[in-house]
Length: 542
Ligand SMILES: O=P(O)(O)OC[C@H]1O[C@](O)(CO)[C@@H](O)[C@@H]1O
Image (cartoon, rainbow, N blue to C red; front, side, top):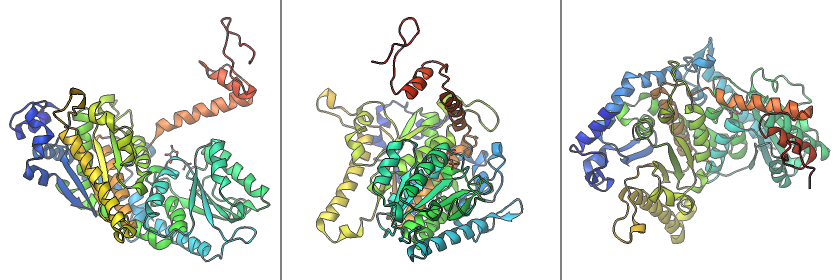
């Protein structure tokens, strides 16, 4: 670490990190430095000039990346090598958007298989749009209810909301993920069962929330409306899972997904291509895939100093491992990108939140990946930005869209709104960097807070694809730089094991679970929570 900091300081004339002349206020005056840290590629822009970075530090970080062979690993991943070593699997989300580039795993051309499944999804969507496939009472489908959780929901929802801004939506999607019955009631209240198509998205088809509870609720809901569930339900699931090879009475169609694409990387498999083509039609999904493909090619082939996802990953390593920031926030200044922070949160934290390196060494907490959270601008400015301006500093990603929505261009009010949005983005970027001096002591803002500005040219399907694949590649590169496996998620399993033990206790009315858990189990049965008295017995409910 010290030598990196030394390089930073040497580059900036031998100052210490806290030296006032190293303040971003002065760094931003260095035009050459700013140009060196402004990058374009894969269809988008990345401005790192408001980071505590300089070319010397970047050179050292790139050398580390080179020594770790991260670009070779990325190429090996795209070529189908089993980079998910703990599960002995390939990680082939990139093959899902490039059917013409053969990728062989265990003798099969995976890219072709994935491309054929997209083709089937497009055909099915067109038949639904053309009313050749209708509900069991002959009513054309008007809505799609998507059951799925985690990676089987977040990415698709993020992309759906983004695409909805500029593309015509034929069939709105509604997402049901959590097992909370409130969510089921809220979603189904606004739907007509007779014209609702239900997609059950679960690779394992064992996720309790989805295939046990919510699917049962939905089946009942359809049956209560005197409909045949099998004519309304489609499975998107792993080949050979309990949702595959089911009888005709279970569902209308099965679309396959595979264990070589993890849930959080699966938007461009059938997990996303079926619901999104039902919503917007096949051409929009093809545009999304093309945008991803452009970014994948950029991520795989550009030299490190021009490679946006790799540079972003190096910046994350610098901020997290060397400068010690525990978290970063993603703030899209674009309402249609509202679910991207949640998608990135899963992508980043499920991929990189690991306890062991690939070499089997424990990863100390302060060298673990950063937490990720976020919200849209300008809303975030009016909630948690206060703390970031004057309290604990954190790095921020601000995302902007260059082109305003076409409707805006027609009116001066519309253009003003778009310009106002960008004014806020740039004002925040500068306020975090420059801070505020003068005024009363409580008005002081120290500034010097790192910000990256990510700019998309537009919000068409291709642009959304650029962003999606950029975030995936940035996450994968960070995993490779940290020498950990960004494709498994064994931590999540522990909670599932606990839940199955508690489920058993509850069904057998055994309330002796550890700590206060037994109290809650009992309360669930009795419908009331009574606290133990001093004798350790429970008072009767009041
Ligand atoms: O698609 P499935 O098997 O229902 O799993 C849902 C999600 O659960 C997880 O395993 C953990 O949250 C995710 O990785 C996955 O996307």
